[in-house]
Length: 111
Image (cartoon, rainbow, N blue to C red; front, side, top):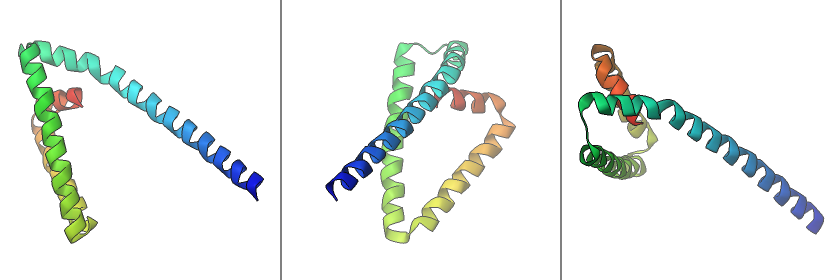
């Protein structure tokens, strides 16, 4: 029984290690694809280090607040309403992105 438990633990650890490596690979690949675009957009807008730092801080703060609000909404009303709001927000943004490609590129560059 103890040997079986150890085998299960080892398999779980190996699976978790593979998944975390794949996740890290995707993260680094995404960053390497978006960073050059982000830098060129920042240069086009004339954004200095203060501007860039402010945008990064505000983006993080809004993400923190938004996550907490959507999480609370999901806990109280179920996930359907939270998912619906997320989809509506994504749809609204995609309509803006179609109308204004530069704004979409800037957003993708900052993600």
